Image (cartoon, rainbow, N blue to C red):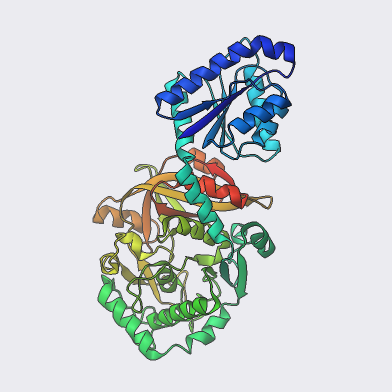
Length: 483
């Protein structure tokens, strides 16, 4: 990686000249360690103390992949902001230990200045000889590698021009799911296409019986088990499972007709309480998955349950990065004895997560269709149940707002399993009939409790932290990394 480094000093020429060699000494130490790590380092030969040095040294470093702003003595914070204007690359502020001079004062003052002008940056405070400090610097550089940044920025830009289907509004009073359609258009370039969910009730009637029968046959052939139950989960073209298939096909056809790239379905309350309708679990699972009976390989159409629109946008960005289905789940429970979170939701786990195979048969053979719980879903139909396959690296994310301004929580972790019997035992403590992903997070429960602000969480396989941080910049979203 090509890394630039410059050092800031006092804005009075007399003092700047006296401190020049001390400042460059600290700079050479940081630069030397970076070279030992295999990086190409470009050192600013002049310490920045006035606008002439801001201009000359800033331009010198403008083509670097990352630029280190080095602090070891007092410096005027406005010099930091002015230099940043010449630097299109990510900035890392390093505050060295030099107690004889107020270098930390300059570090914190400059951090405040960059915050004031809205310039993203990283910060590390301590001696570069400390292995802990070295690890922090290495982590920043890894997360801002040029290829990963390019991937994240490209994914963010692909959102512009997309259409989101808001099929009714968010249910159950979840403010974190509500959106301002004008804000989405202005900030993300995403058109919000609103349509009442009742429209799909009439469209269901137009679906031909042969397409519905094909769906019934496909689910019967590929699911591990369908637990039919009179009055709840019933077979045949007039059964409750057939209603879910009709709704799925109506949604699929409509999204193609209207050019909908991703969508949100209200589900709860509107559709689940009336016996002539059905729950959304099967339609949501199929929309989010990679296959159905009409397409053995299809692109997932990202769908957020409960019309959680900010959840849907999070999922679509994660999908643009990974190209895979995206997990949608409730943060349901934490098993302290196993240090594991039970991530559960009634419909939006794509069956792809059961084995993550390119062959849908491998994934769907783990799926059981349970009768929908009468306690919540009077309309009946099937709940889609399975367990997410283990994964060593998983990225979890969520867009929320603070006073109308977007931020994205980002953390990493893994999926685990405990064996069939223990998985079932844990599942029965929450909702056995729903899909489960057992997750360990790379942050403490205390950190999550104090910072995370949504009931829903979303995930893709792999570590995409760097790409998400990069994607946040063109979207004007504040990244909040909890790991």
